[in-house]
Amino acid sequence: MRPPAALMVAAAILLMLAGVDATVETTCKAAADEDVHVNYVFCVSELSKHYQSSDADTWGLAKIAANMGVNNAYGAIHDIERLLAKPGMDAKTKVTLGQCQGLYDNMKFTFAGAYDEINGRNYAAGKEEAAKAVSLAHQCDDAFVKVAVPSPLKQRSLYSVQTAIVCTAITNLIR
Image (tube, rainbow, N blue to C red; front, side, top):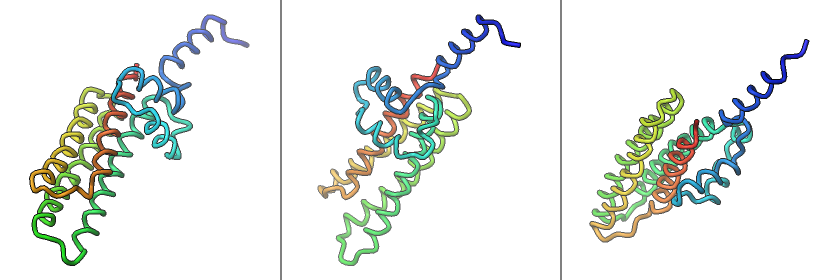
């Protein structure tokens, strides 16, 4: 016994609206179209690296983006630990790295919070958490500027900011 055609059409429309047919490329394109701050190449490149991205809908891709932020924050903390272990570092760089270590420690929790909120379908709170991560990255950058030392964490900071932007933009696509 086949379901009525109208029911099949309605189910197909619901699946499309839910983002089930989303791909990394189409989602990143839509995100970049909605937010000029989204770097499409970054979005596709980084989301595609995740083993679950090919099967993820828009909701899943937003969570993957938040998880990328958590992983980057952990990476920054490990970079800082490695840098602090090097002998001969000047005092102001050491102190600034220590400040950034605390900021990136907080950042891992803000991205984890974004993941949890998006997972719980509390999208506004998830986007607020992602915005906090941007602020934390800027605080680290500013700490190095203040002591007139080039930041060894610049790439981590750029990655954090773009990840938060991508996470927010994709979350905005969830209907």
